[in-house]
Image 1 (tube, rainbow, N blue to C red):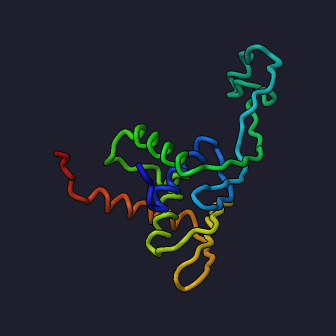
Image 2: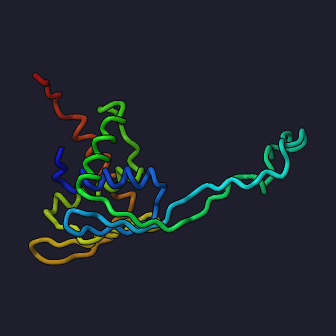
Image 3: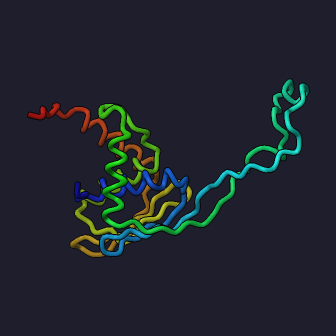
Length: 177
């Protein structure tokens, strides 16, 4: 399988970012390799101080003392994905999709990035950089009319992802012979 669109490429990279639990990141293509720098969340379980919550803690709804609850830590992440890596991620993602007609979570990183990729594909643009921070996607790209930087909200990309889903759902089924 050879991925040919930004929508496919960015969806696969979004799947990898979901797995890594990376929400804020900067993505830059160099040739056929995509370099990603970001922050990921890692849950750290503290060493328990008491083996089990007391009856009174359970009754109050505090089943676990605050000091024993998992803590989320941010850690830096840097990774590069080659075209082969992206093809493999896409292939694994296809195998995991249960219902091809089902509605995916349009707010998930994979769907948000897929919509951003479709936006670039529609403009026939060449991606220079994409970053996600605090609910918005910043795109830096080139078209035949020059370089542009745009900031797109996740809600705009959500709407775009839903429209993409509805178009796909309304397509007639293709029979395989």
